[in-house]
Image 1 (cartoon, rainbow, N blue to C red):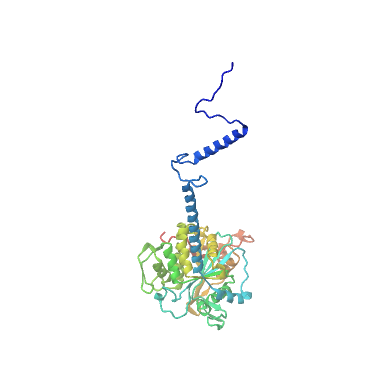
Image 2 (cartoon, rainbow, N blue to C red):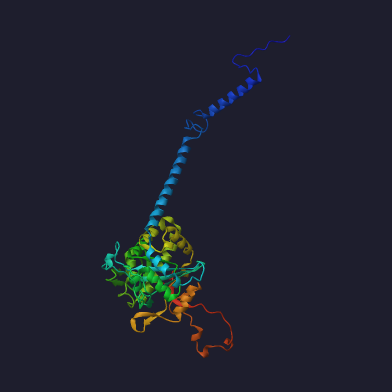
Length: 427
């Protein structure tokens, strides 16, 4: 006889039908989910979660990171706009140059760039009046034609003497009248007709197309030096120049912006007092500045680059092709990998003017050879004074070997005296 089977006390009876079985499974799944969401379940006792079961700390972290990114982007955009707005565009020069486009040289070398750097001696503007009274005029205290090779593997900076005798074309004056064409010293072009007149004079002198230009005043120069925390130079003799407000000891030392300006402008009490010697000193300082910027990684470090750009752009006037931070950055980016020994400085071949020894004139054919190399983006060799190789044409017949006759050889690269950014005056 079969025994009766009864449910034991406390044991729930199972579902009687398949539908009840499915309902029981759904309830069990819901109960399991509730257990996972209940306080004390999971990894943290009493963990605060949102409606989806995500820890609230994760949500706040994400929101904080997003806010930080937006804030950084906003600050970055504000800084960009600030630097971009610092730059002054020389629209008057652009209009004047466009009017004389037909007489300007045609670019020959693709990708090479020729930039005219002009240091203005204006006494107007903040901080410039201490160097003399503002007479409402300005001259180009320093003018450098900077040639960037098309492959960006070298840069050659050619100083143009302020006292060089040149032919200045008829130029438009600030009051709208025009000057007459005249032969006079080079820095008069900037006073007569500003940047456009200077560019047209340089192009007439060299037949080199000037692609861009930059004009910077005393305050801008000082600001750039201070922004890189000073530039180190080495002096063979001490300097005491009241006119330049400069007193420096002999030996290696670091110059701040004010001292650097006095150093590159001093003339009467340093060396032979000539403008030629001053230009060589300016070139050495610029070489030291380039070396400082590259060695400290300024161009690759935004926190170091910003103060330099801020100081430069505050006192910078450029053509429309360089009047934005993006344009300047692209220009600098193309230069940052040039080896310091390939950043060369020189003065255009010159000699005392025959009619006035206080003025300069070009030495030919050397000057024409240099300008040809720049036009064609051909290599220019710059070596220290006394290191030049004598040209074959200067050899006497006794120096020629018998087998030289009829032998063909490539045209030698013209060699000029100067320096480079890797030169150390203390060595």
